[in-house]
Image (tube, rainbow, N blue to C red; front, side, top):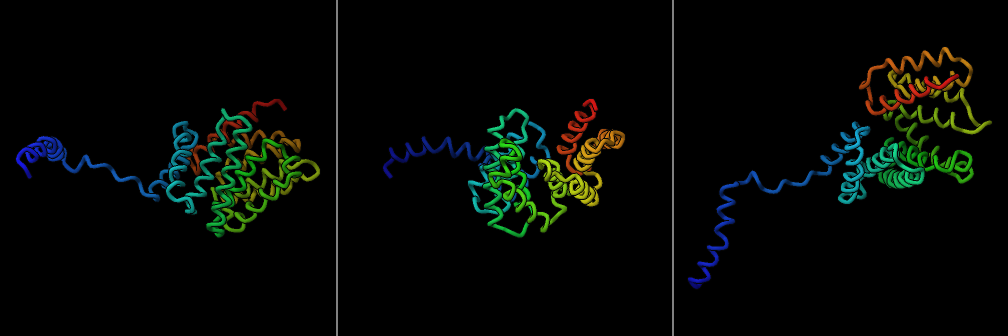
Length: 259
């Protein structure tokens, strides 16, 4: 190498070499999180989904995971779950909720195709298509065949693991029987499903809330008030803190309504 070129090389390279020596390996670029680390992070965010920061981060993280592993079962159903959680935000329009529900259902369907033998995918498929159907109303949803898209995955989740999501599979069935229009509405079947849910998870507050609703509808106000009072007194954090806090708010609103 000519002397001039050697001199220029040293001039331009020496500062970076000196900086590397001073800074050492600790400042090397951090490795991106692995897929398993990303999925664990999504689970942690779901456990804090009533915090605005967690609710905002989860869809972005789910999109990143799907970009890396678009056919991975755990990534797909968690993506559906993140969209369902996002659709629960208070400031969304009905159109936006429906859009998120449909998008979540599509991911859950892909998850069911990837692994038909796990309850997570059909469970979130049922919840997401139920969220999509809310905008059109129960009668329109039934007329357009949405009921089957809701019931089939929920039946599959029930068969695979009825205890999934803290015993909420029977609670979803109870909600279905309570929301059906007359004469298909069936409070007896709803009550049976709620007893099943509470046998799985005695702390399940939403099961108690629906029991209070049935008691009120059947003109048993004392029973309803006792159930709502029990929900108000229940400690938070026994199984799913965001869900427990949400049910407490709904129970307080129900208790405040004149009978």
